[in-house]
Length: 94
Length: 279
Image 1 (cartoon, each protein chain N blue to C red):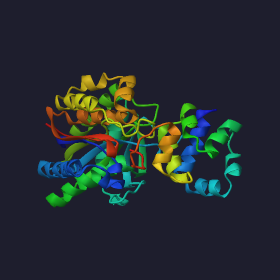
Image 2: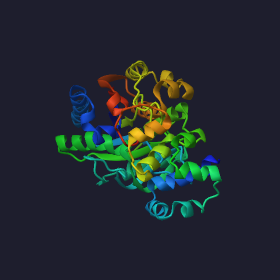
Image 3: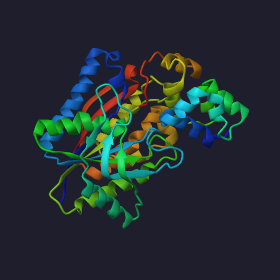
């Protein structure tokens, strides 16, 4: 679990259009370009934002990649994955 | 020489735009009204240029380069992260002043990262569109804006003490700038808010009031003495943005601050404080 590579991948998936397209086409193949371990790949593919934050990834990036790439993009789901019952609806970085 | 006419400390809460109706109507009205109030005050100040001190949110700067402080010296547009009611546009930068600040810095121990063509995010564009652009409309005169970005949301953070020194350097550069510009400063950010963490939605009014008191009394030493641990625990990762306040306060040289409005709005995930810096 290397924070630097995880953050590079999540930054790409938050803001880079080419990366977003390639990830959507074939997530596993896209991630194979990076020196990630099996657990790193699992965290990203399963949108395990809690584990990613515990690995040191900035919450701004877990939020950005969630909003851009997750299946339902709902903040309520994001909050549940973090172990929070927060009902706030704002779905953007602040 | 250029003249400094004051400034403001204001939030840049995007949730105001994406979930306008989430906040209680009375609070929402007060916050939107406070931005308009700031625009009216800026229009009345005679300002011709506003230096807006904000911070990236891990959108503009990626893992390949994370500058501690950056100034846009040329073309400016934004925001990158458009919101309902906050659309991307071209922005009139005071390129001569921005370049002078960077050059003054390089001669006085401040090695600015320079953006020759820059795209802002909401940290710049919310105060720009709600206050600066609106003040230009109200006054009928052009008001240019210079983006300054500090590392206040993504580590490694600029230290609070360096943010103060940087503000003082900006002030020196402005006062040495040979023009008839009237310059104001906006510190954009805060106050308490937790971004992307499980605490999101919490607001710490006690912490916010403490910060507001320090700002209104221009107690930069008090603000700068807050440790990262203290800020993160009591104000959340979003409150690290008080670095932007410190920089703008130091740049303004204000005598005191005047609270325009404060509203703790959990539905907008932020304690929203707006302060005028009066010279």
